[in-house]
Image (cartoon, rainbow, N blue to C red; front, side, top):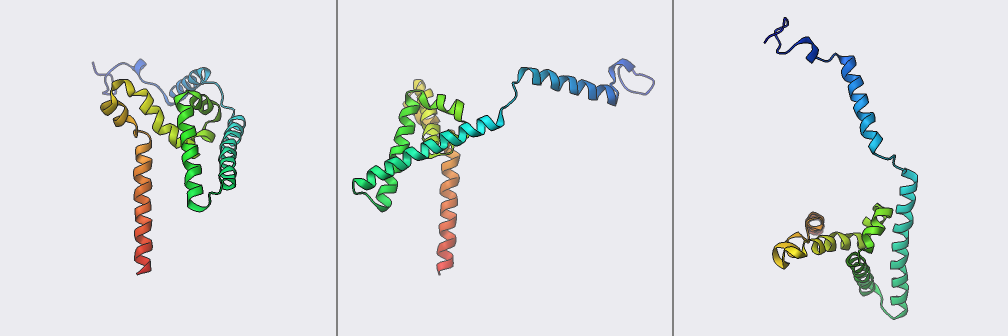
Length: 165
């Protein structure tokens, strides 16, 4: 049935601008009532402290390995491998997820967060088999990071090589 204005439906189906605005505000208030307010300073503080603590652990590894006689690239690589191992081990025990809930980006940004992003899907999808589960899903989060990191590194290396000619 067409109304006098040529549109379908009655006059009761159309909202005015003011009533639509009130409806949107009421809906936003309703949604916000279920969502607790974010404590930005508290979460930033936790991220800073946990990220700093992870870096202190890495620095401790560095000092101990320097004391053991390592130096240069071997020292840097060994510290990285130890931090990756530590992140993977804590992910396997389920500890890193609890750290991440409280620390947020403080646990994601260091290299241990990268290890967590590879190990978590591998553990989660292991029940689907080693090939189609664990191996296929392992790089679902970290894969784009690896691809773009390698691509950017190759592009920068190519630019440096062209500039050196």
